[in-house]
Length: 538
Image (cartoon, rainbow, N blue to C red; front, side, top):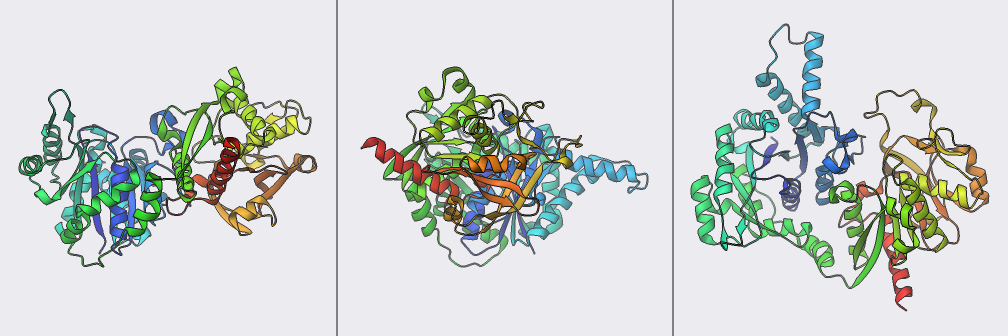
């Protein structure tokens, strides 16, 4: 029978439930268990696909094309689980399903209520996710903070779950804050006591407390938390601020969190070992020998989570190159105002990520031109690829005014345009090219040398495509179309001849990078940037 772990949070948001859940998954995997993770999101949006990145952070895309919460990225980076459309459920999805059933008459005239109809749907989704993954342990993260009205149906469903599967088959982990007051030089446990008290009012008694803190918790503090929160002292886990999120599994393991969980479930597993994770990941991220600076040029740079997977992929690429990657965030609107040279002359690489909307586009195009003409290693992702071909068409092919029809419907040279099947789309939610698609890689190309195979699969999230009418012209002028979606002949990868590293892709490779398995495109981008950095220093 699948075992279930429910992770909740209290006191404040953004404590790191996603990282805590992923870290629990990592230490359980090290004990030989098959683990899956799921995120329950209280917002009423059906998915985060149309939400502002400043409010919600990046949209993480699964292999099967679901637009999901960014925490699913943590799940996949830390563990071997492959998330799917079953791995994320929102209030909007739950109510949408229940209301559709009611409209069809499935409930035979019954009054539809939060309990039992909404909570039953939530529990059904948890079971479906567990069944689809065939996991031995299912970790379910409940979004929001205890006390939020929006979270109540999910917490009630979690409460009911233990009654249905049995005490030994469900476990509650509560992540909370233990603040340190500098003026009083004192650690305060009262916020944690109140948070646990609120959770107990709902009917959930946590089995494990993970305490976020900037100071070490003394034995007296742990005794106090244990006494007032009705949790055994050994199950009060200290989660002190760390230099890297990739240290957290080691921190949990050192405190015996895996043993506590296994004892609760009555599971006997192998001893397990995180030595490889410690050496290949943590040591390399904490003590690199080299340093390289790369620019990420775009908008939405004010919020770290808006491009979370990209930043983490750069960190991963740095690890395997024994380097610390210093990320210089450059607002593309600033390039429009001040030019590219003044903002990019001190970097060893330029990355232009995906995005939507016209704001800052000309700045991205200018940055790409600067990287191309000055032989600076360049990596373009999704919209970054589209901007790269627009720049090349304008400045290398003489097609002045070339553009994407997303930004100029009347452009004389529509280098990027909608496919015919996209032109009649009215509902913008979930109607893009989403999820994994195959790509045939041209032998002898930079892409082939990077991937070392002729067929790859990558995740997509876009609507506009390269216009193949202009393919011959751009090829004559020096672009190599090194990757194509075979079924429709759509361009997936472009690169430039006689350049140390200039490659741009229509897909999102950042969704498939892991700290112990960096994505090859990021790996080679940082390798090339390091080569440039060394030449600059000479």
